[in-house]
Image (cartoon, rainbow, N blue to C red; front, top):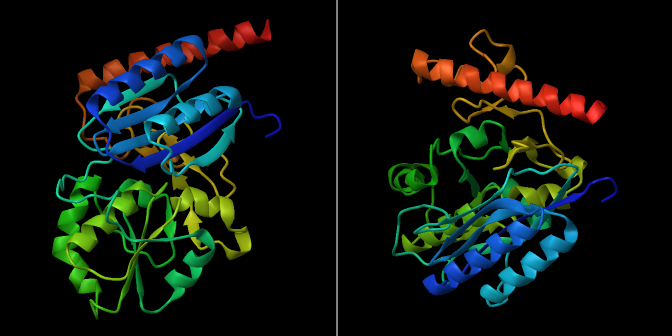
Amino acid sequence: MKGKKYKIVSLYSFFPFKENLILDLKKKLLEIENENDFSGLLIFASEGINGTICAEKNVIDFVIDLLNKYAGNRNLNIKVNFSKEKVFKKLKIKIKKEIVTMGVPEINPAENNGTYIDSTDWNKLIKNQNTIVIDTRNNYEVSLGTFQNSLNPNTRTFSEFPKWVDDHLETHLENKQNTNIAMFCTGGIRCEKATSLLKKKGYKNIFHLQGGILQYLDDIPKEKNLFEGECYVFDKRVALDQDLERGSYSICHACGMPISIQDQERKEYRKGIQCHFCIDQFSEDDRKRFEERQKQIDRSKVKNHKIYKD
């Protein structure tokens, strides 16, 4: 896209990923980072790959080709966006037990999951009176924006979702056999895993939004868009608006919570030091450290601005 140097790709794929291949791929990606302006966050596990990467187009294309080889050319569920600036400081690669942590080892999303629904059919499904819609994201993400009339499980982490299902899902189902259960998340990975969980528990008519909110916003024109608010993303942009441009939220650097323009006007807010979410979370010593860190950040910005002007 004109004037936008960086290509940002969100991706995931469930497939059997052997440990020796994980380590081999990690090594190659770090070598690429060493020689290129390549950043992002990638999570590898025995169940597959998940993450977001950021670089110029030629580097991204090379990395995607490499990931395809290791994933055996399986669908990487790619969502593409563009930015004038880097959205990550550097490349982080994490090796975990799961590419998205649910804590239910007996499910296998690669082999057993719900029915994909593309963006154009999603509106029809969620308008159906016989459908319940579940947002599988964390509560702070839901607070920024969600689909009309969707259920918010009020989870702090995705690993709390199975307990919500056990404790609350039945209360929202008038007819377990005939009700459609439609789930969504940011890019599709959490709702896909959630469908696998529900199928394991015997639920029927399980659907999930292919490509998640990011693909939906890319596909659906504003006049037909049923998503309200902004979509939280796990990079420096914090949230994207309806045009997939950087939204109005920023991050509290003390607690990591997304904060709106209105939140920054509250009396509890001190830039880089505290917000209304974390006012009672930290000690005075912590706040002194945060204050010193913010001073260093501000000094660095002034210095860089001066260099740029000169």
